[in-house]
Amino acid sequence: MPKRGDIVGTVTKALGASKFSVSCSDGNERVCSIPGRLRRRFWIKEGDVVLVKPWVVQSNERGDILWRYSNMDKDKLKAAGLLK
Image (cartoon, rainbow, N blue to C red; front, side):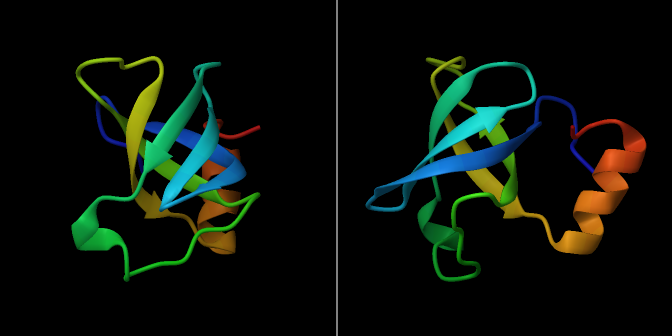
């Protein structure tokens, strides 16, 4: 589950170089990247539900992807009302 300050979003487009366009649950479209320590842990494609940590600077435009949710996790997020 998201912690304080984290946002759930859906990947809309892969931009290349481990950057993705993510439509977040707060209504903003952010360009998010995968931090170096997590790049090889999971693969992300369009339509995946991810956990986003907005940057301190440009918080409405940029962020980091912290986690990719599985199909079972998506159902839990829908039941909790965090995902449409």
